[in-house]
Length: 172
Image (cartoon, rainbow, N blue to C red):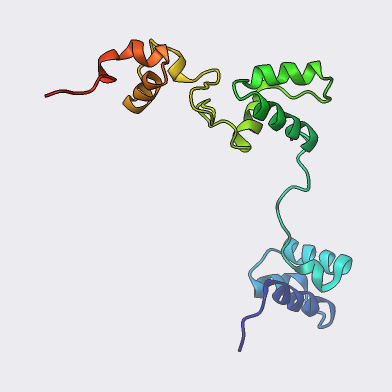
């Protein structure tokens, strides 16, 4: 015997109440659910038939605070044409262009991360170009050795100022 789907099990419970005249309390006890759940199934069955008894997605239908697609496309275009611009400059340019609604800096940052145009540490995908907050821009912050060597090789003063002797070849 095959297993019944969730919708079929709910349908049997609904039929037990409607056709067989069982009480909601007895059907709920037999199916191991609350009485309110059986009442919900009855309402769903009346509203949508057998299809109404199936599981529905819990995903929200919309996200009212999400950036509109046109604005996100404008952010992507600005970032692609100017890889050194961070969220602050992109917001400035969007406001100057009259884009409505103009997103906040944090919203632009999240869009850049979502579009893989910047990682969560503020690094751009363009070598030698750093966004605001990138540790390689600040000589006083300790950095991992690969970042230091990459910065020194690219001629960045941050890497060279932290450890100038690590960029030199090792001689024995």
